Length: 252
Image 1 (cartoon, rainbow, N blue to C red):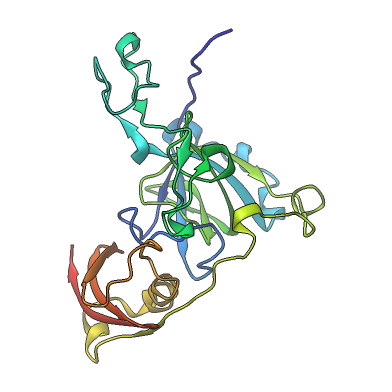
Image 2: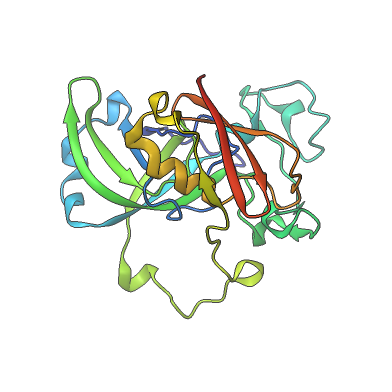
């Protein structure tokens, strides 16, 4: 049996999340978040989307591209890697059988297969998103406008499948260590002139993103200044108790 399988990138995500820090911990949390799924030229065939308009939600299968390491003759950080025998010069993955999920405070160790950690043997992610519309323009061809994605800008998409409520929804399911859904925990305030600099049409999405507290659970310093790259801006903020105060926004 072959040990390696090659998949094609069929599309790329265009989102306002320019780095991993600040991305929602799961899809569907930040419902104000709009992103665009743009197909690679060889997959811009409208026939492949026929009937998709009849679905409200989609499954996206994608690649944790930021978890991959460039091909090396020796990968000291990953003793499980086969990079020393990497004849095809493929990226390797820095995976671990045990991980410390940030949402659990970074102190509890769990097996990687009981988490959604990006550091997996095969860096594949799965997200359920809302299909807003199927659109078309000259630059992108036919593309999808989606809502609630937890994907960084530039994420490669491997496949798209329709969400089927009768098969994919299980309200009685048990969520293990992640039984309770994350909820907004912070009140957010902006400087008076903030939206003279930052686009007002992205206010609600930014507010929602920040209200979920983008910090890892083990970081709680009230004296530290944090920053996220969002929608092409560097957003600086501080957190005191349950209040997040945005300090500034500068073009990244």
